[in-house]
Amino acid sequence: MVKIRSTRKWTAALIALFVFVFMPITVDAEEQPVEIRTIGMFDLTGAYSGLHQLAANAFNDFVTWANSCMHYLPENIKWVHETYDTANDLGKTTAAYQMATSKKPIPIITTGGLTTPSILAVKPLAVRKKIPCIDASSARPIVVPPAWTFSMQPCYEGMLAASAQFLRDNWHADTPYKLIRKRYLENKDRNPRISVIGWNNGFGRGFAQPEAMDYMKKIGVDWVPAEYVPLNPTDTTPNLLRLVEGGADMVYFGMYAESHALILKDAARLGVRDKFQDMCFSSDNLIQLRSYAGELANESMQLTCYRIDSSEWNAITRSMLEKSGLGEVAALLYSGAFGWCDVYAECIRRGVKKVGAENLNGAVIYDMITSLNDYLPMAYNSRVSFSKTRMIGPTDASIYQVQDGEIVKIVSSIYIPDLLPGGMDVVK
Picture (cartoon, rainbow, N blue to C red):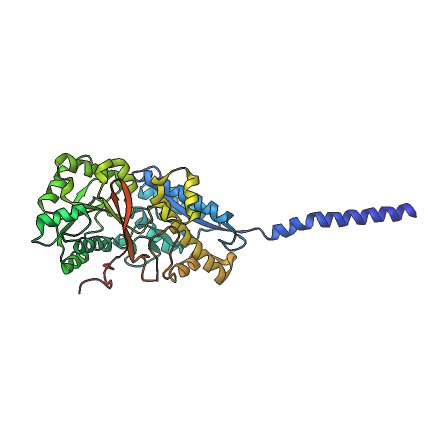
């Protein structure tokens, strides 16, 4: 009898121990985090790969940090970010998008490949799949008519018009900007003149729209016909000579830094580097331009919503860039990626609060994006606001300049006119 009682006691003790040991595992299993997928589509092997690889790294670094940072994401959320290569090819873009969005859990946000053609390929797919696409290009066909493709950069036409406004405002003898002052002193009896030199593609040709021409006429800036060059130009002599002959005082560069640097070198060879003030596109890169063109980059300007000087960032984002080991040359792309990812995270937070993590999907995120108002993303210069009819977030940008080899912010905020069809700044 004693043996039986002792055996029962040991059996009860073992059962209690089993329950004690394994109960936490059962509870943990019930609290597995909800996976939230986002998709980064980039040109990793084509003409844009030098920049897009930096952006892809930045997206991954940010998501890794976000998952490890207490209280940044809602509780019980695991952010899974996947990268796909479009090779800047429409067929590969479509295939990559279909592959990425067919896997479960269905992604709640994607990029569109960070090029105008690839985003256009994604635009109808995003509507069909009900998955918002947040990207950089604000070329007109991407944002008009409104759909599920959003831009984190200002209106292309507006950026050209804002550059023209900056030229107009500084068209006087006391301007601190050497090249503009030189052009004014040589041509003070006429209006300032502006032009574009862009890649011969949808992106490069996206700036010189009729609405921009009308706006410039209204503010007293004359237009010199635009010039277009190949994606990988080799000799831009004819283009430069036409711009100089037309008397362009400012030339807006619709391209990236490699092409911009080559054109500056051609201008120096022709002896016309000081015949115009160059203004970079928002995703051109003064840091890279300085590296590629050396002293020829002095006086170059860039109008951008990105904080291309990491000393302006907070300690968290500076630390991520430092840990990457890529150096300051990656600052522009990291700024862009951090800004986009922070917008993703803000929409995730709002969506989870509204419907719960398990019910989060692209349609919910679309509602969160289109209700985002005056939000300042991490490492960004510009606040963003979206609606169901406004697909472009920023309404202002900053201007940087290379001065004696150093990059200096010369304008903290310049208004970007809304010159899309029906826009509030379109000249009536």
